[in-house]
Length: 512
Image (cartoon, rainbow, N blue to C red; front, side):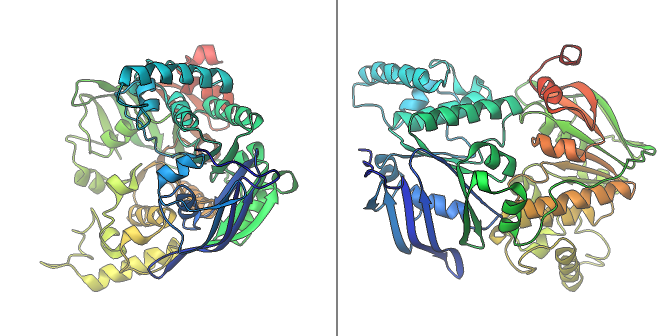
């Protein structure tokens, strides 16, 4: 049963909440009030404690001390079922959906309504149709979730929470995989939910979204709640400074590109996956020395396959790839590194790091055969440590401990380790996937500055990002991908709407 709210009481109130993991004090005496019927933003750097705090609220963790009030009533939340019973729902950054189930089956899952499944299915369908109509969350109940675009999959997650009686919704980085139009649709839905009396907690690192969508915003830094502001009374600049503890440059400063010779050439590249599905459809383009070419598109439209094909991880079915004038003969990452190519993969956990290894072990992955790391039969551990210390200093990795397991660094610092490893090899061609995914505003600033410095030093950079602001800020030219092919090429100062139309599959002539 959903917790009732006392008149005038906050929807959520946290008092003196503490949570530690061994020596790490993740949440320190947290105090937070979230007014009922509002959209409340929670922001902070990577490792600031946001996720831990939301996990306490949703029952994944229990606080070491402190009190939680829901609707003015002190409660215990030992697990997520208790949170759901109190009217708290959560839409995770990575959707918790069964892709080969229908929308209706996903909404029902875990709340089937008893042993008579058909009777429960009929009741669920009626309730789902009513929710779709009330909150303008239109989606086909009989559609298979895996066939839906990500924007509609997100609607299914919201419908799941509402079906279970959620009055308080927690959304974790909800726009990370959406097109600009889909993000706008989401915020219209959130406004509708607010108008119906729902309370929404929005966790995002996109300060522009905070300013556009929220009524109030709370800022966390190093495990503490450092400020709460009415959104109308603050600014992006103030919020960024509160997050990081210093002034942050919120724009990318760069001069005109001075492109030189072609360093990367992709000609009619075709990739077919193990199921026989064509993932890359005759893609052709060039990247020259001294320029950044950005690839925009919703995740899942061939960008990953393109990066993997260029990096030698995935074979081409047809076509050719040249690096620094040398045609790639086989899919061999080591050969490509010798040609002068470095690769920052999209998924740092799956492809960029071995998180059980220490930082000093990760900074030599793929380069461990270099003479300065391995002058004979054995690794030179002293040289490796010195290299790691130098990389950590140059990229401001915190804490600067070469022996710390990489799993114990925040996401932003893990990303810096990967970038340091690849950039410090002085490549002629750098391909970068999602360079700031899940990274806070301070680390984003540092990563962007480093990429511009590399461009100005004459490196050829291919940048893949689902963050349209990032693509527009960094790119000298923009390629837009949809369904495995390049829909068109635009200048770096192209408008958001023009890019968004191409991302949605509109032909460039029609978009113009």
